[in-house]
Structures are given as C-alpha cells and as structure tokens.
Length: 434
Image (cartoon, rainbow, N blue to C red; front, side, top):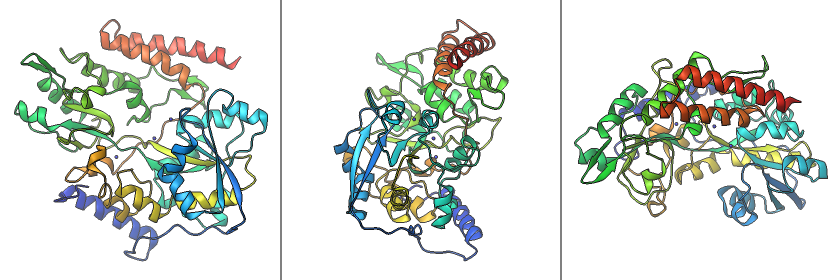
C-alpha cells in the first residue's frame, strides 16, 4: 500500500501559503475565497441502504476499528440512513475470491499498490461520468494522486485520495544538542544529509548513536526519481539503469558509515539513539523531535517524495454508485479535510486554510504534538511524476531487496547487484506470465 510551523511561522511557510493562495486565485479567477465545501452529489436519497466497505490493504482491519476511525465516524454522522458492512482482505476474502463468489462491494479502501490486483479482478470502476454528473472539481485534490490513476488507467479515475501519510526527515534534537551539531535544515540534499550522518554516528559513554536510518522499500515507494520496477509499455523489468544505480548507491552509503550499520527506524522511537530518520510519522513518547523536508537528489533539485495516500474506490460491482460517490464527496470536502488536518492527518485537498491548520489540535499525549514544529516539511512544493505500479512489483521487489542488502554489505557493487536483479526478476516475471 503514495510532504507549517504553527507557532512563529517561518518565512518558508509564508511563501508556501502565498503560492498556494495564488494558485487557487488563478484557478478560480475569483480572488481569495473562504473555505469551500465539495459540491453536493446529484443523488440525495435517504432510503435505508447497506453499503459494503472492503479494505484490500489491511488484513488486520476490523469493522469496529473502521467505524471508530475518522472515516467511519463521518459516514455515521453524515449518512445515518447508511448501514456499513465491513470486509477485510484475508483467507477467503481476497479480491479474486470475492469476485468469484459474487460478493457485492461498494467502496474499497486501498493504496496504490492494491490497484493491480483490483484491476486483475475487474473491481475498479472509472468514476469519470460521476465526476462530470456532479460537477466535482478534481483540481482541488492532491494532483499526483490523480495523475497516478490516469497513468495506471489510461485516463481513468478509479477513486479519490482521502488522506495521506506525513513523510519527512525527522531528527532527535537531544542528540544534536549533546554533540553540538547544528540541526538539519529544509532544502538539504542527500549529500549534505550523508555528511551530517557521519558526524553523528559515534559511541559515547558506551552508548552507540546512529546518524541516519530508513527502510529501503519505503524510500522506493516514495522515491523522488519517478523510478518504476516494470515498464508496462515495453513489457520489461527496468532496474539496472543509471537512475536506479544512483538511487541504490545513495541509500546503501548510509548503511556503510562505520558504526551506522545496525541503525533501524524503530530505534528512533524506542532506544532514541538515531539522530535522523527518513520515514513516515510515528506516535512517539518523547517530544524533543522535529522535522525538515525530505532531502533531495541534486539530479532532481527541489523534488519531494511521492504522495503516500489512502484511497477510497467505488467498486465496479456496486449497485449504489451514486450513494458511494456522495460519501467520497463528503470525505474530500473541506469540512472533513479540515477536521483531520487539525488532528494531524495529512489532508489531500489543496485548500490553503486546510493545509495551514495541520496539527493544530493534535493530542500531545498520543505522540502527535505538532505545536511549534516545522510541519511545512510535509508539504513539498513539487512532487515527482508517480511511478508505475504493476502486478509484477512484489516479485521484482524481492530481488531488489537482495540487491540492496548485497550492496550495503559490500559484497557486490551496484552494477553487478542490479544486473543480477534485472536478470533474475525478468525470469520471475516471465514465469509469472505463463
């Protein structure tokens, strides 16, 4: 399963807000406007209806947890005539099994990585006609989340993003203060981050400190170079080119810093001995952390990470597509997005007021205290073209994980490791196609 300081706003926040406001003004030609709601759906039936919600991305999801989530509470409050039947993927409830059994599905909770299996089982539905019918302005949503779908479906739009995951370079202030090293800054390159990581990787008083941690699969999923494991146009694996070499060498060098080999993202929260972590937001039991924008490649200056959205799709099997679309409109309204933004969930609308409100009511006791923190790091001004996602990616990813481990350990150079990954993954895909 796709990037503002609340107290004492920095100049970068001011510029970001200005640029967002300017973009809104240009697109609406009406100057500054107050927060707007999404247009209301054409169908306003209040007849009782049961809608089936299928979570294809999380086998551990439950009906109780869903109804207590922000989405579940919104549906309950705004659509009292709707009863939800909830299904999570698992044994007997995979997309293929549900398709074969004829189980009706109305709404699907997914990530971009679920799209190939949903497409294979003919569960995706192009909402373009519903969007036109209800005069819904998709320009108000995160552009890259829409662009991904258009690339995947040759112009089709299968769902709306409803929230996103905050991604940044997080850092532990205590470690920087302990060793007298200046904090990271917005706009750093990966080269600058690497030099900083080397300074902070050391042992003091018997305690090891690690300069940097991340997870390769996550960095690929949000990669800033628009890399794709497989090219559907050429029907070929594409992991041995110079861009992949650049990407892999960038992250394996952090693992190769003497003393930094064992750094993990879990240590950032548990042992609290990791100085910097490139990853998604967590719920942490300490408050001496902050974040800056994800470092960038000098070969792709200013390009932030790919959007990491949660989507809701309308199923092709739904008999209640109008009602399902009403729910999607509510979940992407400025009202709902303002509520989740305030509580610390990344919104997927471009409304400046909603973005500015991010984290204002987040509960410090839950590990989500954003007050005084550099939340502008979560909102890059430029995102890359989304990667292609295919049903072969899992098989190719296994080979790439091996290549990364070999490179990090120094047992193979990048050219050799990637060539072998290309060859073995190509054989895996060929076998998969038979």
